[in-house]
Amino acid sequence: MAASPNFPLLCLNGQIVDAATHGVSYLSPAFRYAATAFEGIKAYWNADTEELLLFRLEEHLARLVESCRIMYFDPLPAADVFIAGIKALIKKLSPRETCHVRLYCYIDGDGSMWATGPVSWLVTLIRTPRKDAIQTGIHCGISSWRRISDDVMPPRAKVAANYNNGRLASIQGRLDGYDNIILLTQQGHVSETPGSCFLMVSKGRIITPTTTDSILESITRDTVLQLAREELGLRVVERQIDRTETYLADEAFLCGSAQEVTPVLSIDRRQLGDGTPGPVTTRLRDTYFRAVLGQMPGKERWVTPVKH
Image (cartoon, rainbow, N blue to C red; front, side):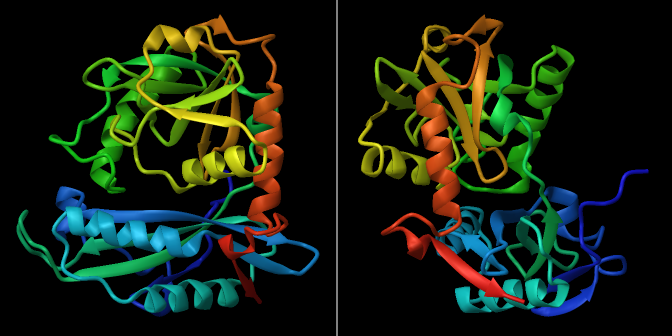
């Protein structure tokens, strides 16, 4: 059996506890009705300074508040409470590797489907070694499952229930032989993958779906678009994208806190470019890696250092 990527402790409502004996009650609305909002915050290990760098922590916490507001959660603790819990867990575990910080807010107790509280929260750390695909690229297909829309389950809310849509598409994609799968909106335009945003390069421009194309308002996407404009001087266009446009792209890539910047080599078995990670994607990926380590002048505020 493979070793668990999880660490043995978690932070539950501000207290460091044993992960094996604490969790979410099976009676809670969180368990029964997926009444859970969450954030995934990358913590990058900087070997030179021997500290973990939380990437765009404040923005992630702000989005968590927005998700909970959309889903009728009772008010959350102040951001400082979450930050203290995250830092306490990191210092207790003292990981010397890049990790994913998972912060969950959920409806606790044994209330009904329409319960809005009490809200509990927990923080876990998960080991996340960098995937080879970030260097080598992946092959994607277009899913027959459509992306949920704002009048069904709002995609801009990062909530557990939404990921059943992506789960179905992901399983289909794997069975069809793809590394990842791209969902279309109800209107047939490109939306996103189950866990990352889609961007393509065409005629020197980066083109990506708008925030109203049933996507999560990704913090990594915002990061990449800022770096493309401000650091690389690239033109960025946010608009609807037709399925067949993706086949004609010079390059394409996915971005997200887990995917980071991952090149896409083909879509529906149509090769993009020469079938290798393209020059724009490679430049953006390398620039992104500098930014997450606080090595991008003017963008140092994006990282929050935590020493052991």
